[in-house]
Each structure stands twice: as C-alpha cells, then as structure tokens.
Image 1 (cartoon, rainbow, N blue to C red):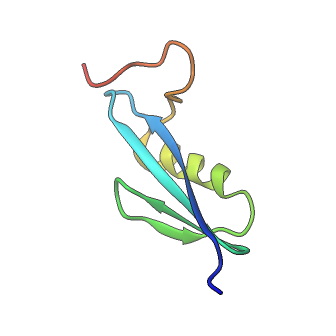
Image 2 (cartoon, rainbow, N blue to C red; image 1 turned 90 degrees about the vertical axis):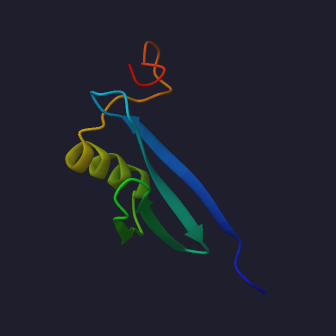
Length: 76
C-alpha cells in the first residue's frame, strides 16, 4: 500500500504585491518543501512550515501573510 501523500502551502506577498508560495508535501514521515516561484526544493523533517516562511522572507522578501487582516488583495 502506498503512503498517504498530503500537500499544504505557505503563501506570502512581497512589497510589490506579488504572491509567493512554498508547498509542503508530506508522504508518510517524510516532508519536502518546494518553492513555486524559484523551484527551490529541500527535504524538511522538522518544522517545514517555518523553513518555508524563512525561504520566502530571505529569497523573495515576501513577508506579508495574505490571511492577516489588512493584507493587500493583489498587485497594484
């Protein structure tokens, strides 16, 4: 039987209103994070969502959480 695979995502916007997304894929105990913007990919056993947020902030300067109140609704 194949392990159940689930995917979640972390999205942030940069200062220009562009959305950047890192997907966290879980297959059994293994987790892989992959950036939709630049293709960066990394295995992440612990704290994959935190590592996704760090990548978005460091590589794309994307720090605005779209689920936060007052976030922009798209490019200006």
